[in-house]
Length: 132
Image (cartoon, rainbow, N blue to C red; front, side, top):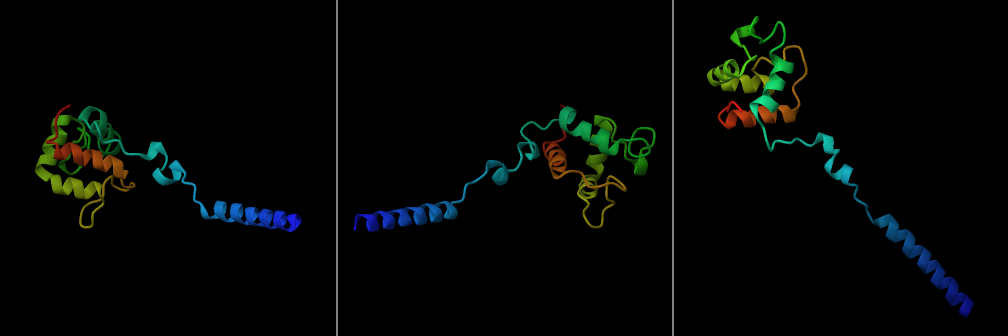
């Protein structure tokens, strides 16, 4: 009798442990929230640290929207020229960098800017385009 009870308890224990570990889901922080390097930090968007580097790398390049070329009349190489251009064509500018249908996709012939970069530019624009 003791041997049968012992075996029964062992079987139940193994069954319980097997089913309980298979039914549990262990969340992995990286799987849930992504890699911390992919998180978009928009807490301190400034022209000098967030927007200007994007303009220099993506827009105000040789043959595009720099002071020498100013393709389509857009010089995005300085704060003043960038602000003036966006002020006079905010909808066109946003539509272009978002690759919205009906707008000329920018950067021309390149891939769309990262969503985080576009978000930073939009936040700066919506904040009144401060020179900070």
